[in-house]
Length: 214
Image 1: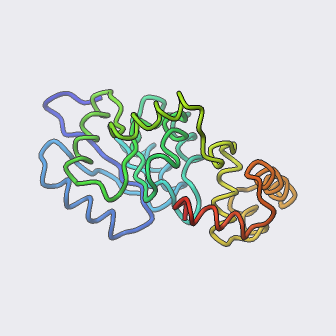
Image 2 (image 1 turned 90 degrees about the horizontal axis):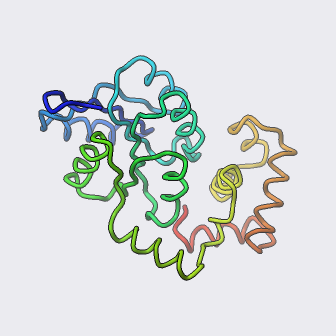
C-alpha cells in the first residue's frame, strides 16, 4: 500500500506496445501515479513483479491469444496483497466475476474514460475494489433471477480452451499454449460442447460472436 506522500507504483501488462505507451504517457501527467514497469506477456509479468516494488498491476485480459487468468492466479499466489485491475475488450458481464473471484481488485473495459481508470487505480491502491455500478446491479439481478450465460458454467480451464478454440487454434496448438496434452484438450472440448449444448466448433464460434466473446 502507499502513503499520501508516495506515488502509486504501477506495472502495465499488455501485449500491445502502443497501448502500453499510451497509458505510460497518460499516467505521467499525474504526480501521484508512476509506471515503473511494463510486461508484454505472462512470463515477463511474473518476472517483473519480482524485480519491482509495486502498488497496482494493470493486466490485459488476453495476451498472446489466451486469457491471462492463470498468470493472474500465479501472481496472487506469489504476492497475495498486490491489487490487480483487469483491462478488457469484453463487457464486464462476460469475465469480470471470474477474475474478481480469482483475486482481481477491479475490472475495466479498455474503452473506459482515462479518468475512470485513474480513479480505479487510486481506489484499489488504497485497498478498495472497483466495478461499475451498472455491472454490480446486473449481477445482483442475475443472481436473484437465477440466470447465467452458458459460458459461465465452464471451469476456468474449460473457458481458456473455449477461448482458444473459438479463436481458431487447433487442439495441438492449444495443448502447447496451456502446457497440457492433446488428449486433455480434447476432453475439455467434449465437456465444453456438452455444457454449452452445441455439436461443433462452428456452433461454439457462432455463440462467441453473438455474445461478443471474440
